[in-house]
Length: 322
Image (cartoon, rainbow, N blue to C red; front, side, top):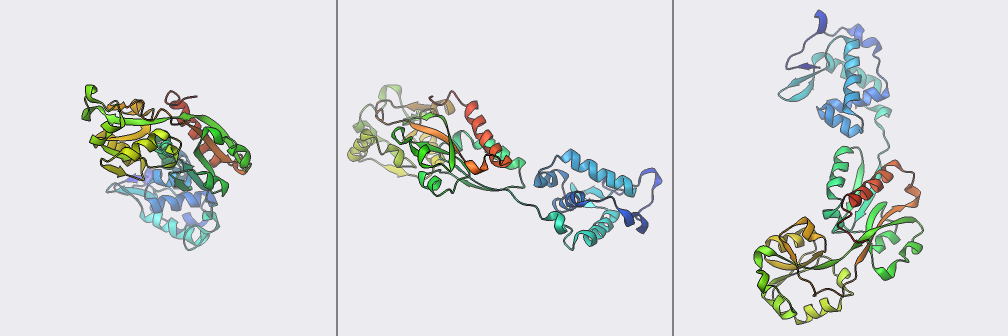
């Protein structure tokens, strides 16, 4: 590939019509060539096709060697076709269809529905999931921030992470279309940021909470079994903020001088957070299950995401209870 200006190795000459008479281009190379043209980037083209960028560049370089002149040139930090490259593009369009793709461009796209219940999505799998999406630009993913029993019942989830109450473990038997794997337990309690409280003046009874803005949790269901939480809400006459979003709820507790319900491991993520013990000690921990449709147990993409989620939990195994 040339840079800035077209050059021709060994004094080679530009395009000759005879050179294009017998191009060594198969379906795969045609797809790679046109993807590079569309993306104006070797790296993005390789991502879009889910192939190594080194292999793509080597195959295009061999095509240039056959023709005897560069096909791509960098101009103003952008990859463009040389004059010869434009003629090669025209020739391949005739061979592979008007869009330059033809049958070679008709690839079966991987479509997967991923559902991960908060706070797991934001706190535990977020980084690994972002990296996966970055490296798999060819896929079609639908990501949900909850994985409810109803979604599983309706088979709307391909791979997911769901919370199960301790007394509801028979969910596994009720859904034979899925394979369940327990990853651990997550508990919740009230937290306050240390920057907005003095250690000698921390709330110790329900009445003390009235002087603070109380963040009502993003999900009412996981507090439904707590009699103490119902008591707090029945007596509370202070300000409240109800946010149907976990990340914002957490941000309000950390930086908004609020008291709110967060996962017990939150103190390991943010050192300024201080738990307020005793207020929710009757709240049951939630069992965390990794689920995958049994019919996808041989699907490489679904298995890769399944493996990715297990790795995410393994990396943070000290955050969860067994």
